[in-house]
Length: 345
Image 1 (cartoon, helix red, strand yellow):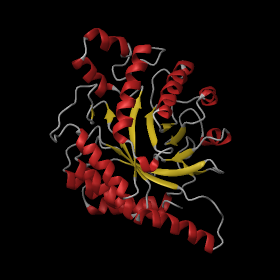
Image 2 (tube, rainbow, N blue to C red):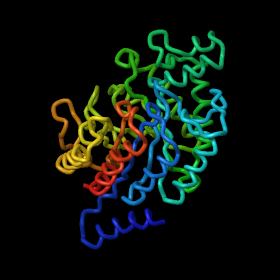
Image 3 (cartoon, rainbow, N blue to C red):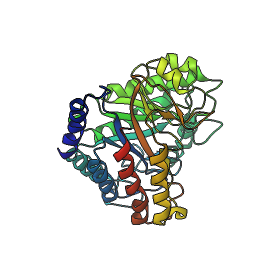
Image 4 (tube, one colour):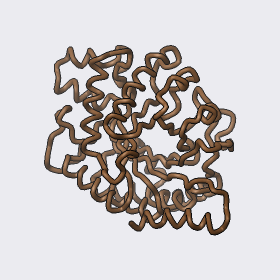
């Protein structure tokens, strides 16, 4: 309730001061929990910070090369006791209830077809070798085969259905988001048609499960963007094949997660308060919701018109594996607080 009131007061303040009627931007946190598993109590403290700052969501990137950090009957991760490898089912449900009470949406982030090595390893362990070989790419062991492979597509659908069921938040029915990743996919320059067929199939299934699909921008060509399902929103982190203007001209819903200003990797190098203060001051100086990370300028201001829906601060944890939970939180929480205080800029 407190979080919802803060958002309503923002809009009221804009109205009373006669400011432009630009809709309030959505503000969220994307947290990598695959490379560095964290307990549910850790995530609750992140949710508390999001609530306090008037943020909207926490996106959990729980699947990558280093692990699949969720309960899964399909993949054989069925422990009921809390452990240091993945969240058990009761923890996920506890997290959802906690977030509901604080008006924070939880976005599951199941990144396919790349970044799949963690769950593909579990497939190899649970199923026979032949089945594993039938769904993994023959040129990258971290890539599920996206070349019109019905077995691979069906398994991805089953996993999405399993994830969607446990993450469901009824209060966000009709607009809860599910991230399908789609980033850093080998071969998309030459095989965009096959890539888009896979993404459209998966995003369509996400919608069938009651969620709105989102993905990263970097593996899309202009031809692919035209063919992409219209229901897929885009998180833009840096220019790869298309500048942000192409997405805007195609009326694509955008969330800006500028690789320079809104991406951070906690580490031992930044364990002192001075380093975090320096990062806070940097974000204050350079962040603007319409500043995108482009090839010619990572701080290029773009007229996003009505396409920009929000921004997201992303935390990748591959450099913070050796940090304790408290050391990790000591870096993340102040940055979240600062980001949310200026996220409407």
